[in-house]
Image 1 (cartoon, rainbow, N blue to C red):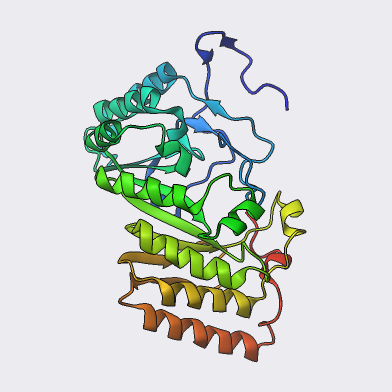
Image 2 (cartoon, helix red, strand yellow; image 1 turned 45 degrees about the horizontal axis):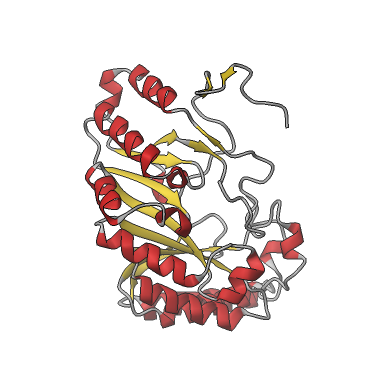
Length: 308
């Protein structure tokens, strides 16, 4: 890949950084948030199932560029911003020495902020002491999105996640203790047919232990991950619904539950465990509809309907 930034110096890196470098991803809940691209890509970029940042070299945006860029936004516009999402894949990987100054910049320039959110990996959180996490919360970091992907360590190894379910649980508990809410996600079909039951049961177990404020499910997505897809037998639509039912029925921790990603077969929203029965009935109804239409046994990830 040719260099993106032709004007650099050895100390500060790129002297020119566009407002946004594509591709740019955000959670569905951040549709109305201003996005500040603190990093580009993912510091790990090794998950076999994830094609979001494949072929993109990880880069950290220079702090002075972030400061200059935010200060250049007209004051009357900055004063209207109440939600910020820090991109890209795991900006918290920069550690407290860089993220705390970023949060200070955001707080200084966006005076109406109510929340700052970001993606993170479990190992990112281990870079921060408890006091540093609390400091991040005081500076406005209110929600961190963490991918559990699966509660099964066997499935995590298969997927190349590079972490264990226990790492996720520890990270969530430490964030919660600091007053930072956790929004966790898992991937339906990640274990294929062979591990579908283990994937569902262990994912629910990890959620029960981690107690995130929010928990979401999305379907396995096709794109820049063909080598991984070739190692599993993807689930049919009915099997995806069955896996969802098992997860929903097994969660005991109180959380807001959503399955509203474009990849999801069915849009779901409720509170667990309170709304579990209603959600299960919706899923079973959709299973009957898919069966009646002759679509139950087909595989969505192979049909190209769950691409990026």
